[in-house]
Length: 290
Ligand SMILES: Nc1nc2c(ncn2[C@@H]2O[C@H](COP(=O)(O)OP(=O)(O)O)[C@@H](O)[C@H]2O)c(=O)[nH]1
Ligand SMILES: [Mg+2]
Ligand SMILES: [Zn+2]
Image (cartoon, rainbow, N blue to C red; front, side):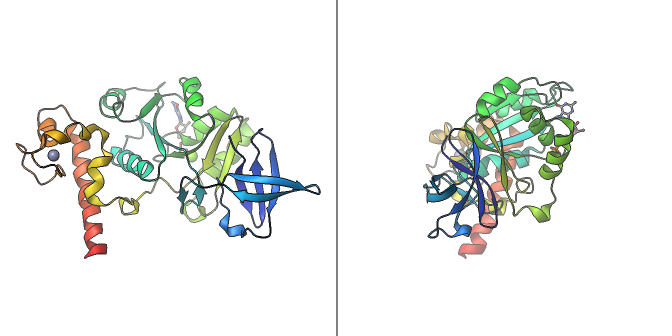
């Protein structure tokens, strides 16, 4: 992994070097402090005992809220309790794809009950990577760690699904530290401007409180491109009567997606969420494009 900015305070930056050590550095005079973000990959130089940021490498993405560069993977956490809101899951998947982020679905609390596994297996395993874990017992964490390694990850998901517990299980924190970090991870909505990446070996996790309240109007997707974001629908598209079928207002006999929903090959609930997201994005488009 390259050198990564993991924390920023005033004009002081903390950088995790490619060898794993963490140093503090100042930007070189030509770099504006506010132009360097947590997550930025940088080259550094040691100038008389002080590290200086020489260069910012090209970014693969830059999120504004939270301010974070180069996010590789979004860990979307669900559990049996609280009951999953798959509408949020679908929006987070779309959000990931639209920023070039890999979505990962983590189904936590496997020690308690597994009654959502079947639905997840049927609807989500065909489209994204899924891991079944228990933050309480550590089940599934070997696999999870392998998927998180050498990437900048962030956690998202409803409150109480176990995001903090997952961090604790990953990082083996002692009880005192767990308390502190949980507080940070659980920070309120008003303090999401600041962002920091926690590191443990090769695992990097951004402390981001901003993802849960994701509003579909924030999705940078034109409504007519929405079908292209549905991996599970793409294979049906050649069988739709119209090549630009959106699978919404067309009749069942003309739309292969609609008929697959009708005969049960595609999940009806996910399709309902699709039409809802489609309509919201369409309204937004009409508002901004007249
Ligand atoms: N049984 C069980 N409880 C869990 C597990 N993970 C988290 N919890 C509990 O679920 C509650 C919410 O967890 P927390 O990590 O605070 O959720 P967050 O709001 O997503 O950060 C707490 O009472 C945890 O102890 C798990 O794998 N199994
Ligand atoms: Mg939490
Ligand atoms: Zn169609």
